[in-house]
Amino acid sequence: MTGAYSPAAPDWLKESLWHHATVTAVLVPYSPRVLDLEDIRVTFAEDWSPQIQADMLVTAGYDEDLFEMLDPQKRVKLLIDAGYTYPDGTTDVHRLADLYLLTRPIRRPDNTMALTAASGEAVTQGARLDPWTAWVPDRAGLTEFVTWATTYGMYPEAPEIDSVVGSGFGAAALADLPVEAGDDLWSLISEAASRTGAWVYADGNKWIITRSPTSTGTAAYALTTGPEGTIFTSDSQLSRDGFANSCVIKYMWRTGTTDHLIHGYARINGGPYAPEAAGRMGDAVERPGPITQDAANQAAAARLANLATRGRSLLLEAHAAYWLRPSNTITVQLSTGPPETVLVRAVTFAPLAGTMNVTTRQAINVPMKIGE
Amino acid sequence: MTVTITAAPSTVTGAAYLEITTTNPVVALTRTDKNGTRPVRLEAGALPFTGTATFRDYEPALSGPVLYRASTDYGTAETSTTLAGQGPRFTVPASPLLSVGAATVYDYAANRKTRSTVHEVIGRADPIIVRARMGTRTGTLSIVCADHADLMDLEAVFALGATVMFRQAEHAGLDMYFHATETAAVPNTGKWELTVSYVELTYPAGPVLGAWTFADLAATGATFAEIAAAYPSFTALLLNTPGPL
Image (tube, rainbow over all chains, first blue to last red; front, side, top):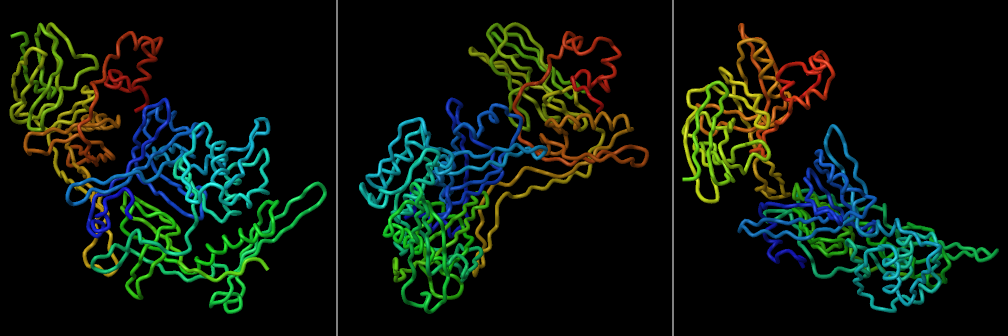
């Protein structure tokens, strides 16, 4: 479960290591350039779009060619590699993220550039359906819909699609999805994902269509304190913030002169966190229609399944395990209490300091009442 | 033998004067001294050449033998010389016109700081180190100057912000290329003293800058007075660094 990294990496992380990080800027027709990094942080967060976001501080000399190349208006890719050199002398460096450059300020007299970059969602957020070109959304299923939307949104690049839901999944929920000229492609993808209860995100131009896990799987990494430990700081939080035991999604639209309003609804049904026991902790959002009542309720249930896992979270700073990603399962043993198995909600890597900051959510399966 | 080389030291400029005669093109000219082996810094486009040419090397060590080797595709020639017996010297390798000998350098102090990060683990006695190499030397050194005019000549070496080379004869390994981050001048018992804060740099690649000609100069101003006003000193004129300072 260490991805491209050596299977021995979790054991090596208990020791002192050399860490590496490089950022390579790529833009045709320029030759790729490795940037002089002063600082870098890369965040993967399941509830953010773009899911991968990076901030870096890069030395800015007087290299006009580089300044001309690092133009966010062109589609500049930043390839971020990170890894280790182990005490046995082997070097284990792999691609951490494949991002698009968003901003490039040059600051004088500091002589730095504070670059920001993000994964492919950022590109589709800027791409809007053009009223003059013929386009027909492919509603045969979520995979087909995302393929159509990313092909349009990532143009002229061809997207790579990695779907675990198969073809035809969610076709019924997509039948009513409104698609109009002027819509940005990411809002269409995001709405399609919400209606079908799936999770869509990009790693560079690779689009992953999957389901957000509510239960834990095989642990990708074990974090502990104590003599063999790697946890530098921990902050264990119980909060009503972010937690919800009921969810309303309000869909409003108009056809001709008729206004339509549908509320999708789901709540925790039974147990200590249900409204009967814990009180009402509601969440409400508005989304564009049209939609059917059943599809609206399913969308609310999918949202609640994630919100219900957020009451208890751990904020951990630890020795960086570069293969960890949101939705991975990890086990955590703090100085007190039993070991816990939790899901990663967000992880931020700071390769120059060799640290990662992990935010977790609880893995609970709550009984749910969907609709009335 | 198709290539010959001779070398002679200069006590005035702290340089070695090289003369090379060759029938095959000389493709490399290197110096080996106690600071290691490096190519001799020349003006851009100086190599390859055939015939007879003279060069000045402003970066040889000030103690021990200095070996020069001129290489052609068909053979090499070597010669050695020494610049022993000279005082410490500060030189800008890219603009060797800025080269000042100092009578006394004292109060040298050097720090090297690790770039590693030490992380303390909860409940664990030993820390986890994210390892990194140690940085180069940083610190200060003080230079004694006979009078304020000498001090200003010395300051001019650091004023450009270019890499400066420090050479001296007494301590092996103390020579360095550095960048001055701060200079402080104070009078001291009838003399002047300049304290330089430095950051050591690695060997700077690049040619000797030059080729600023009378034609270029004539184009910058219509009258002699204009040029005299634009350049604060003759050194500034030679280096083409106009400006108030």
